[in-house]
Image 1 (cartoon, one colour):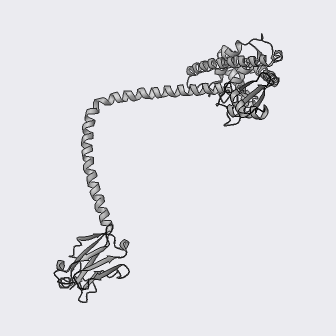
Image 2 (tube, one colour):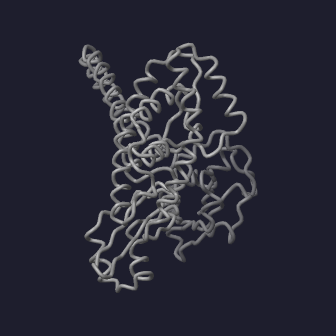
Length: 396
């Protein structure tokens, strides 16, 4: 295994891609990965042609993906072995470009406190390999710089297709249709992460085009993102399965009471229907009460004789015995028609609306037929009379 693979494997473990787990877990897995890496493959300077460089990059990416998958499986297995209360860390910190003194102290403390000899040796190896990784990072950077390919650093929301079209039309000076034709022949990804390097190279002699994505500053490749999403979906699926099984068990336990519940539901449904009818009626009654003018209409002489009105027919004297049983629903009409025969009269010559707080001509109007055969009370301000009670004294 070459130095480049060592670097890329190390680059594969970055904070954005790794969950919070024990630092010891990193030591276990990283040592497993690095243990298989030798120095038999030539360094970056050996590759001479673009084809050799691209082949090297392809091989490295495949090895990174395979190793990463193995690492994550082993990390999961290790995490399940940890007991509550055992110390854990963001172990991705050990692959950062620089460790702060505090972080370095944490790593040293973990080494000192580790009782298992094999784990302790692995931790020490990880710390010692940091300088080697930094040197490999420089070698790989040099390797990328020797490629004839150009790259752009992806921003949030960028698409590889759009970036490639921009390169082909503006850098390679191809017409859009030609650029689209070339893009149909290469793999593309829309799962870019801000900081990815998106590479392009067009060979006008061979009329060939290549584009690919490397982790760059993001530390994540599109394939790594897809794998992380897949792992998330699998975890969600397992969670839903567990919830489903629990729900099924609850359903099974409820079956024993289903018959009684259905009987109760039928009774409650019937009661609900009855209550709804009552509520509707009450609601209708309330609406009627709030929007109607209630009145008591009677012969003025009778009202005087019964002591309801004073002798001058201008003041209410005693209305305790009156019932305001008649109503005018102001939502439907604002005119009340009075007929003399309903009040023991042969004609209507005068109508008085009491109490006198209501002003004729402003709040209401009284219209008497010329032949005195009837009279009408027209409500001019319905809002004023909604829900109110009035006395109508009718004179013949």
